[in-house]
Image (cartoon, rainbow, N blue to C red; front, side, top):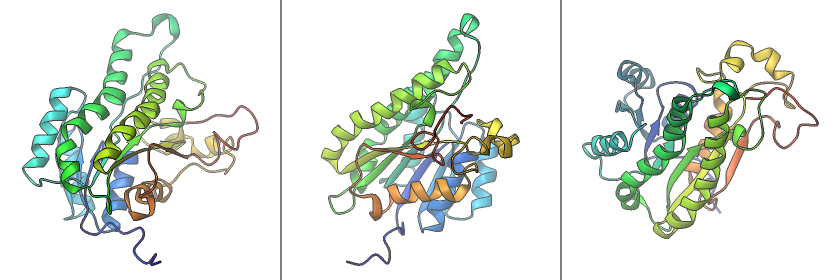
Length: 262
């Protein structure tokens, strides 16, 4: 047994949606540090190109809005201009919406469900050929869906479509995994807890207060997220299929009572 390069990603090609900031950027930076070439996509072109420049020559920006099926197909076409194979796809782009039950709007439902559930499915579908081209029994391709602990437990806020979308994506991960393993493509998910990001402003702006409700007594940092993603993407995670890894400092599985979470 040789574990020397168990977590290395040398020669692998990855695509991370929502890769210009937050969790997506953490994962992209981690992959690059382990030797991968990483394409990042984001709706805002300027932010996408700025992050690619920051992360270095092994990071390439492919700006695109993947909230529609047309956008997913367009991103797949953009990637095909650079490479005909894809070792790792991280479906990270997402949205949240919170409003009281009596006034929760249809647009707050559709925007979140489209980006958080529909897009991971249809982007993976659009990239199926590229993933199969990279995949083998000895080195499966990987699809990593970024879900949330809000798909596993309630938070204190009225985020109806977000809760529903992340729960759905966790189960969609299992359904996709059952099919795509036939093509040597492993589908898994990561359910983050409190990480400082534009989406999780509570953790970003009130990290110390949030940390008091977390069993580990801190919010997540970039290495926590990158580590989980590297594990699933690398040889170390080749026998993990359909599972969701919870990265939350113990909120879901080690909390003793009600506390503030992501």
